[in-house]
Every structure is written in C-alpha cells, then in structure tokens.
Image (cartoon, rainbow, N blue to C red; front, side):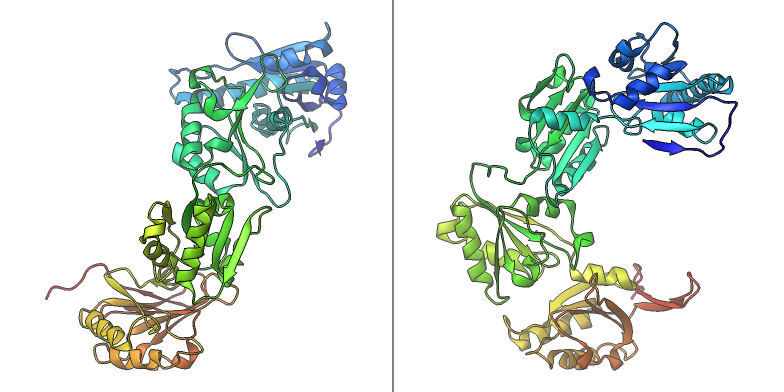
Amino acid sequence: MSEQHPHPQTTTGRLYGVGLGPGDPSLMTVRAVEVIAAADVVAYHSARHGRSIARSIAERHLRPGHIEERLVYPVTTGTTDHPGGYRGAMEEFYEEAAARLAAHLDAGRTVAVLAEGDPLFYSSYQHMHKRLAHRYPTEVVPGVTSFSAASARLGEPLVEGEEVLTILPGTLPEEELAARLAATDSAVVMKLGRTFPAVRGALERSGRLDDARYVERATMSGERTGRLADVDPSSVPYFSVAVLPSRVDAEPRAGRGEVVVVGLGPAGPLWLTPEARGELAAAQDVVGYSTYVDRVPARPGQRRHASDNKVESERAEFALDLARQGRRVAVVSSGDPGVFAMATAVLEVASEGPYLDIPVRVVPGMTAAHAAASRAGAPLGHDYAVVSLSDRLKPWEVIAERLRSAASADLVLALYNPGSRSRVWQVGKARELLLEFRAPDTPVVVARDVGGPSESVRIVPLGELDPAEVDMRTILLVGSTQTQVATRTADGSPERIVWTPRRYPEA
C-alpha cells in the first residue's frame, strides 16, 4: 500500500484507489475488501452501455448503504464531436469526474475508486489520483495485475535470472513495437482488441511470433489461452494480452540453422541496436574474437565460442558448420560487421560449395568512424573515404596509393587500424604522405576507446599528430581543406568542435 498525507485534514474524507485484481473476485486482497466495506462512496468507470467490470468484480462486497458513483466515459473507441477531439473529451470527463468525487470528500465521505488490476498500472484511477491525491488523504491498495494473472494461467515463467521484462501498450506503432520486442527478453503487450493485427505483425517482424502466447480474460469467465499465431484477429477482445515468456530453458526452435553476423557497435550496450540485441538473445551459439564475445551477456543454454583475432576464415567456417547442424549462430564483430570485420569473412566462406545453402544474414552496427565523429562534432559532414592502415591483408603500397588518391580528391579520411604493438610506423608514414596534400594545421580527430571507460577524443593539427599516442583502439579522422574547428562555451567551459561544411566551394 502507498500512503500520501500532503495536508492532514480532519474535516474531509479519504480517497482510496482500490485494485481489484484481474477479474476473479477471489483474487481481491483482504485490504481491498476491507476498504470497500468501510467506504461511504464506491466509484467505478463504465462505458455508455453502463456495465462495469470493476463493479461486477466487487459486487459481493457492496451494500445497500453505499453511494455509487458511475463514471461513464463519453467516448471509448468511437468518434466524438468535442472541439478538442478525443483527448479534449477525455480531459473534460476526468475533470468533471474528479469534481464529483471531490464533492463527496469535502463532505467528509470516504471514497473508494475501483480499478481492475492495479490502480496505478494502465488504470483509469490514476487520472483521479493525479487530480485529487495532493488535496486529500489518499491510500492506494495494490492489486494483482492482468499480466501476472496471464503468466499464471499459462503456467510458464515470465522472467528468470537476469532477464528483462518489457511491458508494452499495443497502441504503439507497429515498427516501434517490433523494435522493442526484438530487444527484450520477455514481454507483455497490453491493450489488444483492434491493435491485434499490428501486434501480431510486430511479433513476426521481430522474429518472436513462434514464441508468443495469447491470454484472453485471464481468471474470468470465457478465459482462453494458446499460441498467438493461431488466434483469429477478429475474435480478440480488449481484455487480452500477448506474452513472450522466459527464454531460459525454452526448447530450441526446430528448423533450419542459420548464421547471423551481428555488429555490436563500438562499445557497450548503449551502442547496440534493438535488432542486434534481439539476434544475440535468440542465438544458440555465439562465435567471435574473445574480446567481442565477452561483450555479449551470457545466457543459460547459449554456447560461446571465443577465438583469437587472426583466424577470421576458420571462425567463419566453424560458425557455418554449426549452422549446418541446425544451430542458430551469431557471429559477432565490433562496430559494423561489414566494415573491416567479420561479414566479409563469413560471406567469402559461405560462397563456397559446402555452405551455399546455409542462410546468412548481416545485422548492422554503429561503426567506429561515426561514433568518433559524433563525439567531435561533424567532421564527416561531406564526402569522406574509409581506409584501413593495416598492411596485414594488403601491401602498404596499395594503402599509400589509396591515401594519395583520397587526399588529392580532398576527401575527409577515416583511418581504421592505425597502429598496434606490431605496427608502429604506419601512422608516421601516413602523416608524411597526407602533408603533401594538406596544410599542417588540418584538424585530426584522435579518438580512442569511444564509448568505453577510457574514452579520449582530441582534436590536433595534422603536423603535430604523434604516432606514439595511437594504438589499435584508436581511430583517426583527418579533415579536408574545408574542415573547420571552433571553440564553443555552451555549458560555461570551452569546448572545441570540428565539422566539415556540406557546401563545397565552386571551382
């Protein structure tokens, strides 16, 4: 129970928000029954037809002496001619309803507002609470929620261990629903009825339809449960929910194996897309360089296969062999898997005879260049080229020629893999070459561990770029002749930013 006593008064009544539970009267709490029995006024919402589910749940506890306040919605799913539209009509209704209850409270009467489920969970009571709780002594009596009842009726765990539960209204746009469903472990989608086709579509788009369960009128007469994919959309009432139960101990999905190459972004969960998060959760096996595999949250039953950074082809072949066995495999890469990363290695091997029939998908991620650019301003605001300085897979002569071509074309340069323990001279050579085409004061963004705990982003002149300060966790963004640097003081302290104008001067 939650108590609010903003202004203790002795002459006014007391407001109660009473949670009735999901529908079965026997699931009401003892406190809810006590409050209803002692109340002077019992209020409940209903549609224009006058029937109130809340009243029917509490009916056995009502007595002849109760003053009943029926709060009838002016509109539910229909249209309205109110000048403020649906929202305006509802706001006016809530104000009028609150005024009716306030009159009872001012007269010293105790008012119990009935609410299905819990009073502060998608409930109409909360509109009364926001308008009255700061004016009168108030108590909220919690109730069993509909999603708790649905989970109980399904008899399947909702969340376990470190899993995350997401509660969603079915009224969200389908794309938004799909993104959130893809990113979470377990979910409940409320408010079905007319929204069911969009909810079903979102579950299908997020790859979760086969796991989804349907519960209608949980604990009430006419209760129905089953696989959501089997439900006729025309038969779905408002009082139904979609449930994605816990994935822990779930039976592996029968079917054809596949490989999904997943971009993890530059660092940490904030850089992970909802689609990537969902693919990682759904994978039976995670394959990748050990540093990247460690960034994927461990899940019960999921197998992890970490390896050295220099065995891309072997790693790709291993992942495809797992998929041939019917496994759903996620191959992980930092940043975007298609930018100097594992997507190429997987597709190269997958284009050979034994693996031609194995499904392979690539899920993009935030690449290091874009992450670093966002921290510095907008240095990639115009045309730019992306070049890896690593000569492990291509000769330095090729790298040098590409740097000359990009520099002579006056492109901004994003330089990946600039240095490592075994490659210490490439940055110096690249700087010398670029100085043939760029002024020494050309801005260079030196970004290290972007998004990580030791993030460092600096802007230095090209002529002063120190190769000793560059390692394998660093990316360099070298400006064009048009790239600008400015100092701003928006937060009271000086901050240097860099950007490349979108307009290029006429020849």
